[in-house]
Length: 124
Image 1 (cartoon, helix red, strand yellow):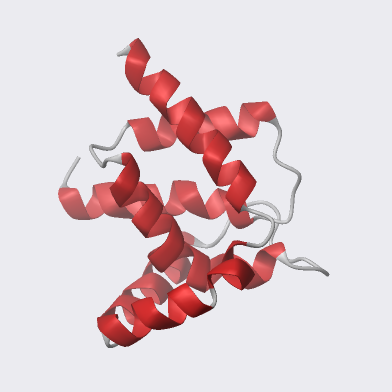
Image 2 (spheres, helix red, strand yellow):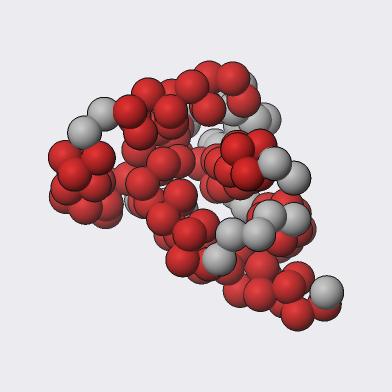
């Protein structure tokens, strides 16, 4: 996979955590399998979760909810790229301040994804 498309693939997979649905074990495994297709480390993926996907998608996970099937990939990728183009020091500082708000309702699922991801990697 080309590095840029691999990154986009990871963003799309991670964005599923922010859909307005109750994630079941099968959903967590599906996200983990998609992330296992990339060459990114757990630390890199966690960085993408915290600093790329969460700032763009967090509103969807809050009541009254929103998108529940999938995010439009073009919108998702362009929104993340716009955020990345902004002052990175400021963005990371803002993300750190708003981390609890951004991750509300998804962090436990993210930990489940990482656990499943490591199982997937062990299989290979």
